[in-house]
Image 1: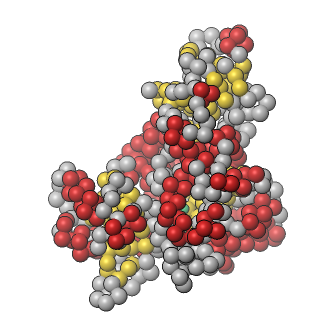
Image 2: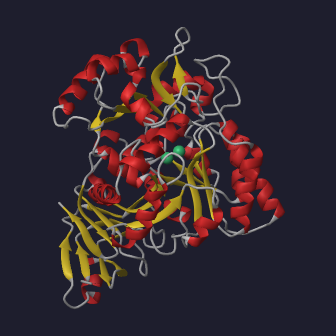
Image 3: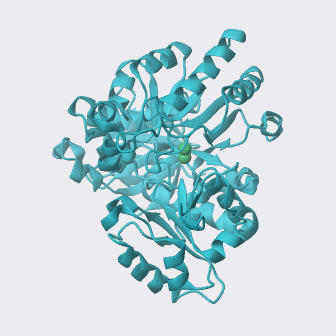
Length: 512
Ligand SMILES: [Zn+2]
Ligand SMILES: [Zn+2]
């Protein structure tokens, strides 16, 4: 392992003891000195590689506390539908992509959002059949909780009319092609189990890691396997984890506690979906959706099922995590944590909530009292218009309230939920600063904390990573600009920050 030294940097250590420095030295993959150019020159390891940061800002390597890494890599190979503004444009984009495919190959697209199309409706099965005939077509909604399929894909994915989540036409009883959870999850796992090979999985993981490194990200909570995905994803990532270029904590999205223990993991869960998403009206809320009276979303597990799972994992010493977006789903997991901890007190469990998007003040107080932490995705804020119509003014104001939660003393780790939004910490940071509610807009530095030092807490790594402190692993992101010369309220410029070097475990893993 080569040692290295960084000089002439605007180094933001995110360590309150020495918050700023010009230079740092790395030996055997760890930071040994942080200080002025002069100090570090004296401590420079013999033969070290020298990086001139050119007065640009340097940060700890960023964390992303919520990524579906295999899925993110898979989506990098699908047709991007985010730019389509209408159903006609969707067809055009797909037709162009189809030209590259041989007959019979699946046409996969990601990121459609029918809420922005005229008429707010998605292409139907009939329309997709007319356009693409016998080729299987599977298009994924931007929130990944809904797909639109044609007849060929519907059959190949083993979907059936009458299944929960399979939408049918109220007049004809025929499937419309729209498939929501839980059938969406089943379709996904069938697709990943039967149509994806392990070689493809390895390729997806490497692709996603390379993307993370380009974005200054060196540590990821990888939420893999389980009902929405394939357990092969977990097998493969566990097998090659140490050869991947970033630091990965695997969260196996299963409720099989013994299996996870046999895999040698100290944590369990991830997006085990207690509820769905706001976009598809399936996130579980205490009160009706503002734009769908009578609808309060869906809960996919009973309180007893959650209680039993949480208690078993808790007793066996694991950190537990589950997906809950709406306050009614949060209530279930919170209740399960309260019961398990009351029965078997355990300090420092750090049980997590994934998303915690629409919580109540009371729930936040209880989560803090238990010592739970929150993996939240500020980039969901880009869907503010949709969220506002789903939730209405009052609930919207207290959604994704990372600022309040952090001020209350809860540990909040930032993440992207990639592939839902890209692995891109400065996009997440900018989003956290742009909250719909002016009172919930975070400062730049608090948002950085959420993606570095505080995030490290969620994976029990605050003693090893998350700040540029002597003794910690040298995970370093050198940016291409000096933020001291920037207006730190200008989120557009913040979003444009890129990296010249990303270093993980003391090795340069990305260089522009
Ligand atoms: Zn989730
Ligand atoms: Zn997720």
